[in-house]
Length: 355
Image 1: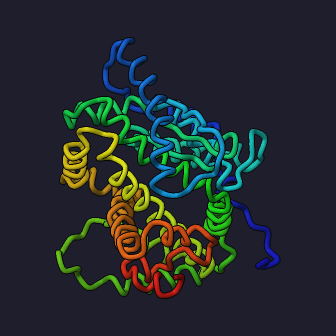
Image 2: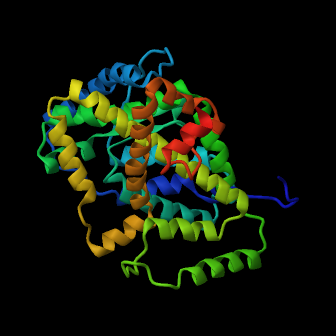
Image 3: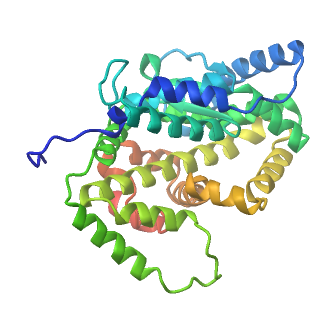
């Protein structure tokens, strides 16, 4: 709804080219590999991304009927550049020449964005970008795959295929249901639009949020956690932005949980050492981090991401276990059939409402 005031999207306030440059310079180097190992992992990831597609389609019952697209195998700087392009599109940013993005403030926000992406680039294994070239692109970050498989001491090819099962599921989700990208884009548009609220209203909401959180938590922790950071974000948002944030959080929880469910359903048939990989990977997810790293992870939303995997998978496991995958797939019909925030932890509520 228009307020009569001009609004500036977040994307137009960032110098995305500068963000990519800063991110590439700050990215940590990947693990040392020989040319032979580099070529081998690139070739095997490409092959695994192709071979994972048909089992994923079969288990999910989602099949857009098209040819299997090739994944793009990238290093950390290449992922950062692709991520800045995707974020620019998602947040309504412009190419070079936008006056706001080219300003001093645009370069400052660009530097901040680049620094965040540099941090993230050392941990992300793969990503399906629904806003990438050709209506979506699967990226696999080979240095990180090598680093994690070495850390876990697992069979390299098995681990590479296992990773691809998860990421290819995201590709199938979006390609079989094109409206998902549009739904996500609309919510992002609301979330990243500059608020027209009066400053006093924002300060009032923030003060109320702080007042409610003065009581100590049960565990006495003072450092930020994912729930607290989401709460702080919601405190300064307008009602439409809070609704958009809820939509994105629920959608992310569903997509990640569904991918983890599919990965475990397909894995035993195609990945011989899947049990070992899953056990060691889960142990790695739950490993306690140093204090500073825990704070950074909370600020960047990594803890919320892990919560999405566990809560989302529990939701999908429960619904599929009760009604089967074919009836579960009613969830992909339209935005109205996606789970509500209250239904993620109460799957029966979704079943009662939708089925």
